[in-house]
Image (cartoon, rainbow, N blue to C red):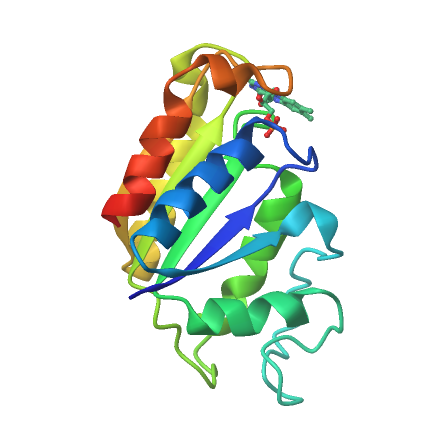
Length: 181
Ligand SMILES: Cc1cc2nc3c(=O)[nH]c(=O)nc-3n(C[C@H](O)[C@H](O)[C@H](O)COP(=O)(O)O)c2cc1C
């Protein structure tokens, strides 16, 4: 049994990436894993302010926003699933802000190491497949830096309106990936 954290980035509830996340969760729960879903776009999480005061007041970050809810979930997770629509050729600002705040776990004066070993990337976009280039490059660089292993990437091009993803086979693929994790 793994602890899986599904971090989503779209503000569109029930949108394409949200459905992708839920399909993955269905598969992962069927396989017996414990899954938490955290919708960064429903929370107030600011970007990192580079104050370098991480851990000085006991918590990972000194600023009291909703990152305080995300931090314990990240600390417990074995697997992180990054789910975002492509916004301007990369992930959405909402999920990027949440990921930026993980800086606290990679500073030399950190008080805790994450036990995360693997990540999954689930994404969708309105345009053709080449539009994921920027996001995939960021994802791969993130993994190279942290040492996390890639456990699967699903990118779904040519979905724009809410529900467009239902006309693709992507939800079945996401569920299968969740089952196999
Ligand atoms: C602010 C914004 C920026 C976007 N930028 C891109 C983009 O650069 N390339 C693209 O193909 N689609 C872009 N899209 C379209 C979304 O990626 C697409 O509609 C996706 O299916 C939305 O997923 P969601 O339903 O999970 O929110 C953008 C949408 C928004 C709202």
